[in-house]
Image 1: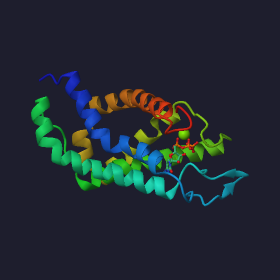
Image 2: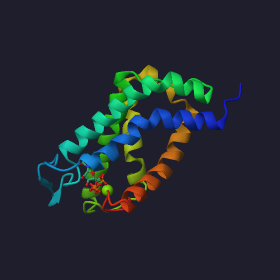
Image 3: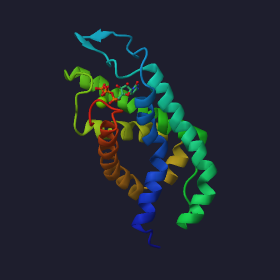
Image 4: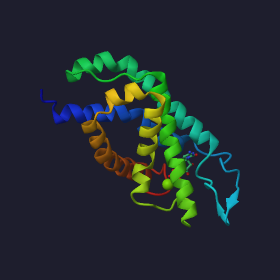
Length: 183
Ligand code: CTP
Ligand code: MG
């Protein structure tokens, strides 16, 4: 049985939506107290002012809520595309959303350790940090759901497609004046 490439791409995009939205929600909601409370390590900020409690909470909430909305839309959209899209157990939605935020926070930690200031680019890491975080925490939070949903071809598509989407949305947010840097 051949599963079409288009079906795999649609499935990959759909399954990753709860992980794609958090970083953008954090950009819109960010501000307030930084998670590291201004603390430094070896003379450099632990995370920096770009990782805030408010942004992280808003991002996690947005991704989780989106997963629940997708569950409601699933029957209609599955009917439209002509194959069955996955639904999200709550644990999976939380895992994908929080994992995306934690991956991004981990990347900021590494950026500060390597002397990069807030907002500095780290090509490769910037595009994949949240994907890796989301996939790892998604697996931990809902292992059976994860292995049924993220089959090997879907995973490969996620890893190829996400950096492209990330570049496009960040350049867009920059051009709209929502973000200070285009990455
Ligand atoms: N943001 C936030 N909390 C997070 C992630 C993001 O408040 N956990 C908000 C911040 O206002 C941040 C903006 O979203 O400045 C853009 O996010 P990002 O590009 O990840 O942060 P940078 O400011 O570029 O900082 P860094 O160099 O640490 O990535
Ligand atoms: Mg940045």
